[in-house]
Image (tube, rainbow, N blue to C red; front, top):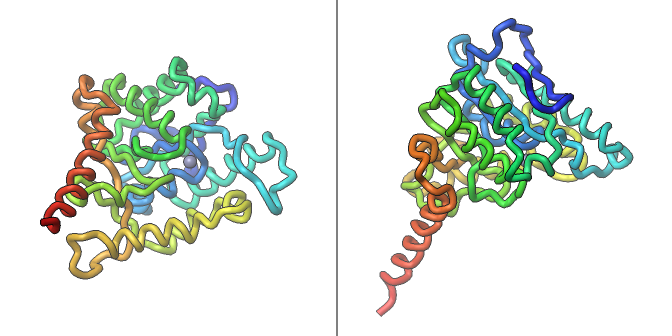
Length: 279
Ligand SMILES: [Zn+2]
């Protein structure tokens, strides 16, 4: 496999000589730690399971990360190296089949005309042939996440392998606003020790300014509690996703129209609910 960026790397925790072929669940995230937020269901399902394997792909090099406290004086290169190291630690702890770090600067990822990330992703998807893909959803509010999501869809459309299901998962901006019947529910309450350990490994982000460890746990618990169809909490943590599979199976579907259809569905729900109680 020839990845486009000079310092791209593939870490294989168990040193298997065929890390890709065994993959059943593939996660594709923009930054180091996004996989542990958006693909935890997949990571946990594959953990210590010899018939299921999670493959992780991280697209950016982490050089542009914010930094404070102990990391305040890190150069961009030192910060990138630290973030890559943290992501590989998570791959080791989480028993990933492989962890690819594509090493893209954000500006290349955000260039609509640049095909290099799409080509890298096609190679990984065709080598891994995953049944399930976990990626960023199209209503996220982080530009890099959206840029990568569009590259992922292009790669999945181009790839000769079509996964059974593509989940666009919440990271920056949750998906609580989606109508419950439109939501895909991802379990996030199994092995809470593993969930906390994985997110806790990203010390440069947590000590460096944001309590993602608490925020992610809080969001998952809140989702489980406020999910309407549950009369009582029979799960203690869940994440929400948008089903992106139709975009891959039918290339004529416009990506913007598809995403906005969920917003229209939300708008209709709000409108009808208020109208019920007006004279
Ligand atoms: Zn991110």
